[in-house]
Amino acid sequence: MNREELTEFLDSTLELSAFPGDPSNNGLQVEGGAEVRRVCFGVDANLAIIEHAAATGADFIFVHHGLSWGGEPRRWTGVTAARFRKMFERGISLYAAHLPLDANLKFGHNAELLRIAGASGRTPFCSYHGLTIGCSGVMNEPATPDELAGRLAAGLISPPQIAIFGDRRRPVRRVGAVSGGGGFEAVDAAIADKLDALITGEVTHEIYSLIAESGLTVVKLGHYASETPGVEAMRKLTAAKFGIPCDFVDLPTGL
Image (cartoon, rainbow, N blue to C red):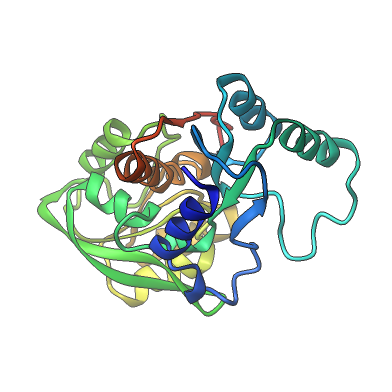
């Protein structure tokens, strides 16, 4: 298929134009060959996924975390040079979708986390730098935090690093999801919306006491694992739409 057709489809599906304030330089970051025969999907743009693409004959890479952020990179040397050199040598394109993939109510990380958890409804939730990136919903049947964590562990494509904060016995009904490092914004939003539980990627020392004293239950999955479901959803969608081989490249960080 044509690279421009694929890029336009991804731009439209993820509504990149709705995120002008995102400094993540969403969209096509590296322009490779005009034809796309195979696509690799992953969380992070690093040398490992680029080498995997080259080894498997893929000529397009889709990631959540790209290589260009704001005005960076400013030096095309060292690690940065090795990454770009491999892509240009092999004609590999790189496409990144950061906050748009968090926020998308059909294919985003947070919508998928709620689906896996067994929740219905997709209400935009949690403002981050003026952009709404999470979503909340209602469990089809109340579940304990341990049951919620079990569903997520079974449904994610990469094993999560699960930890539960709060009352493990209290049933969860209203739940929100903010993948990655939701931080204070996610916890504050969950408390303000009177949610029973928050699914997120990271819990830092600074927000531990706020969680403990608020009565909120938090299920931590690890940053990497929490940002795999949207990538996998886009892989399935792209494969079904265009009928080309699409691989998920699992490169967990343990974080």
